[in-house]
Image (cartoon, one colour):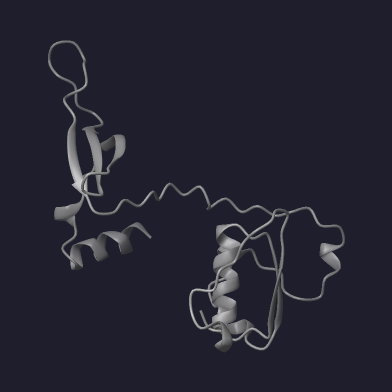
Amino acid sequence: MCGYIEAYAKHFNLYQHIQLNTSVVRVLRDETDSKWLVEVRPTNSTDLSGGVPTETKTHRFDRVVFATGIHLKLNWPDIKGRHRFAGEIVHGLRMKEPSKYKGKRVLIIGLALTGADCARHLAREGAERVYCSHRRQVLLVCSGNASSGKS
């Protein structure tokens, strides 16, 4: 995987936009121009006067993506009788080809980020029905043409 990412970055000349060995100190929204201010500091830098971290730099961005990986932990609910289910059971993070569920009825357990993404992809790829089971109230808003069933 690392080799693929490195080759991708090299192919698209992305290294010029990447800062390695850098810690994000603070992220603030500048409401005057709707820009994001990202304050960073080199991770292994200290000045020569006694180990005080070097000065920070602040960069301005139009958008910020927080990709911390908090949704990568597989959470399997304890469901009695799950082992007796004859159909396929797949965690949403492992569902890579929603088209293979075309014409099938699918139950999604949990409607957080991963579950909502799966429901949308399954519906677009032609699942016969997508059922969602979740604990809390949730509001789903169709962003496209509701009458066509497409979003």
